[in-house]
Length: 125
Image (cartoon, one colour):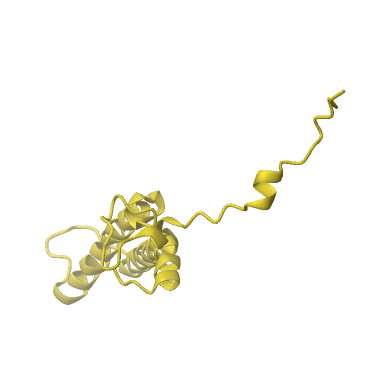
């Protein structure tokens, strides 16, 4: 009479472990994967694109700094009000620095899989 014990180990998977290659190990020598199709692509990470947007947004703070510098050099022209230029200087500097640091940080984070791929394979594509 046969046993109905279903608590038997799966000998096939235990005897023959899965040694499937990683995707980059299966690349043909000299093959450069397409940027959007590669699993390590930085272009598919939202943190990369948000970081690029923050860097572009930092131009607003840089514009404020340029405006402050122009007011120091040539005066305020025919404007009737006196501006607190030091306040605008610090606001523009804070906007520019915070957005630039945040943007470059997010781009660094978005490229972590590419750096891992580059360190693993030695490829520079």
